[in-house]
Length: 205
Image (tube, rainbow, N blue to C red; front, side):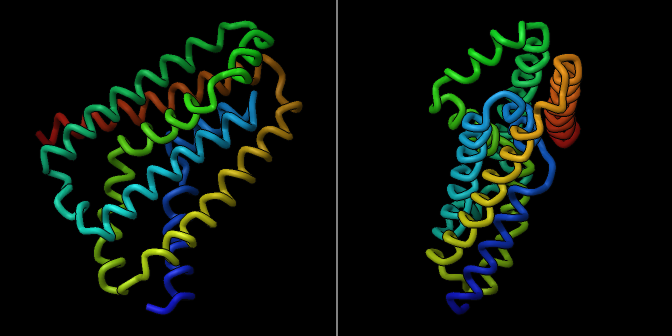
């Protein structure tokens, strides 16, 4: 495919991987209520995980990771457990004094925020299924890796820059009580994703 075609395809893949509401976007929104930097770094980690899968596809390594494979099941188990752990941490943080929580999050290690986004995405079976479904599209259209990668990065960077920025700039409209409710709702949604992953793993075992 042409340079432009590869770029556009990469951009569409990036939008498809980053925009749908899932655990990573819920977590980014939750972090953005306190720190834009940490929310952006979470998104950056998630983007690097998507880049990892895209690279594995182009070099033919990802082909053997099927839904019924042992590798997929191990990733699903780890991903489900990690999501439940994150849900617990978010739920627990609702009772911490808001000023103290803000200080803790703001001075959190940038690497910790980045690695949280990377691990959550790389261990998310929904991410694996998304990229598995893209195997045929990428192969059939003979995309150029470098320009597909650039398109992917452009799409995801736009999303992880603007979405948390909007949430961060409008956070003043949320009272501490409302923020607490958002934390609880975020925890419940992420917990639901984690339980869903583990249930599917058990039922398909």
